[in-house]
Image 1 (cartoon, helix red, strand yellow):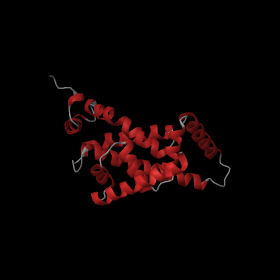
Image 2 (cartoon, one colour):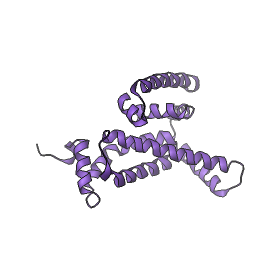
Image 3 (cartoon, one colour):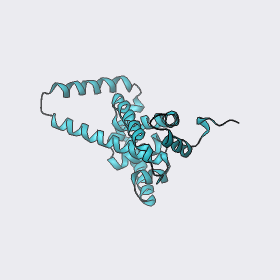
Image 4 (cartoon, one colour):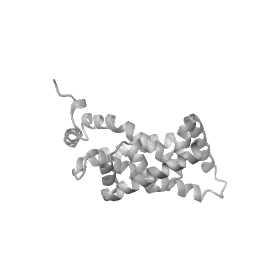
Length: 193
């Protein structure tokens, strides 16, 4: 059976990308193809607004493009990628929150247009009541709880991978995960049933 990019493992693609970039992006494009949907899904749940999630996903892969040649294999590519993605989403979320706080009492047109766009996008994108409710439950969680839930269920990372992404001990990550899962169930029952 001939070897194609789709049959290569991540490590091989990363090594090929390190040699090829920036002039040839074929191997890198295969990595993007593999991980674009899970990264987008995590960004979408984290940021709530579809257009923000699309932009964030592109920005994450641009960061990866520029830093991949220096990737040192201290973790798996997947763990490294989701570390970049979650940190980027946290930064964007905090900027949005600061922006909203700054303009909360003002009459700034750009803040209004941003809120209108966010509102329109949310209304158009969230037709399913259950999805809306799940998102509202996620929004009620702390940052640490949100990180664990999204990395586990949206990005489908293992508990071990989540511990590496969040740079926490495995035992602490397991405890946080199980407590968060219980809290999620309770909030879901309270607000979604």
